[in-house]
Amino acid sequence: MLDPYGPAAEAVAWTWWAMFGFSAVVLVGVVALWLIGMRRSPAAIPEEKAAIYNRRWIVWGGIVLPCVSIVLLLSFGIPQGKRMLPLPVEGEQPLKVEVIGHQWWWEVRYPESGVVTANQMNLPAGRPLDIHVTSADVIHSFWIPRLGGKIDMIPGRTNVIRLEADRPATHRGQCSEFCGMQHTHMILYSEVQTAEDFADWIRARQQWQAPEPDATTRDLFQRECAACHQVSSLKGSPVQTTDETLLIGPDLGDVASRSHLGAGVLRNEAGAIRRWLSEHQRLKPENRMPSLDHLEDRELDVLADWLETLTP
Ligand code: HEC
Ligand SMILES: [Cu+2]
Image (cartoon, rainbow, N blue to C red; front, side, top):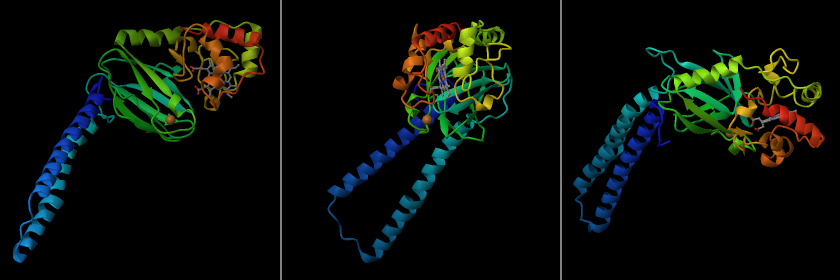
């Protein structure tokens, strides 16, 4: 959070430092007064002065000090907070990205280009982003600390946060509202790219068609997986289901291109997809994908072999 990669994150970091500095000054002041108070031998205060002293403490310490402190903090904090609101911008229009929280993974949609992915969010550097967040089940919270503030993802409601990334880098995002057993393992890797690389990334996904699985693999997928997973890159295929809102698992259209599986629990190296299919309940206990123990190794092998090819 204190290593900002964009204006919204900078605002957060500055607010943090300002509040830290201010509270440090207050702490030093209080401790100094306390030390002085401890060392001074009590002087007899005449009756008539005592009431004045008491009132002075209340007026200066109880009214003026808190008012000045709060006004100072707000005059710093409100403009900083404004930088994270989706207000109109001059020049390039913000890129709209929809992020939907699920137990326990992230659905990421680019409505302008029709691209859908999961657990990875590629973003262009130097362009404002309006992140529209909601949830498919319980309350989650969207937070990529190096890019800016966090915002709650609430079922049935869309919240918007304005972010911007100023240079290419990979950032880690984390669900930050406790959402159940695997809340910890709800990590969103965000790859900030140059505008050209990002356009290529989007174009690759728009144009790409997944290789057709053979009949056995297709039947297997249809029977065992399609109730929860869609493969959006498999154009015009019966594997595609129509009612997206019923899908409780991530779109697998570009699954082999993701850096991790299971929202951060498993690095997606060679063989990782196969490992996920047989070990996912051990890697991520109680995640919403049922164990596939009833399938034979051979069946998991053909599914994994095909899923491995799903990268634009
Ligand atoms: C009842 C619903 C359901 C069924 C059936 C199901 N899955 Fe899943 N799957 C999920 C959910 C939910 C996740 C996300 C788990 C998580 O990360 O918490 C997931 C995750 C995955 C992932 C990791 C994707 C990623 O990017 O992290 C792969 C690969 C996968 N499933 C493949 C399969 C295959 C192949 C089948 C069929 C043999 C299958 N799934 C059947 C619900 C299901
Ligand atoms: Cu969570």
